[in-house]
Length: 75
Image (tube, rainbow, N blue to C red; front, side):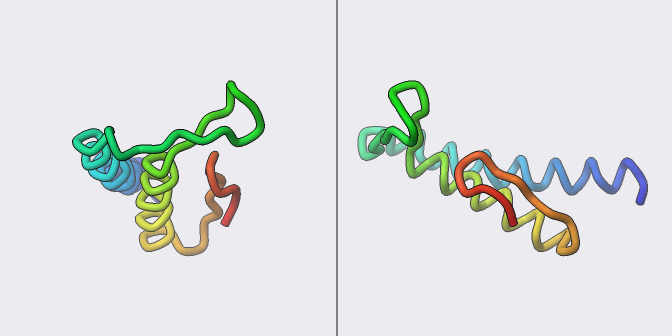
């Protein structure tokens, strides 16, 4: 596979995650922050939904590749 093709996939995934993050930025007052393993390990719904959007793009465009994410682990 060509590097340009992989870059296009990465760009598309990053844009999908950024769209979700920017939507949450506009609604930050509704965002709850939770601790995962301690006070230095925080997560929000925005984090999880951004990761979901990224994984959806990667899974759709590269279904045979594995994905390891910070919030949900691996696919």
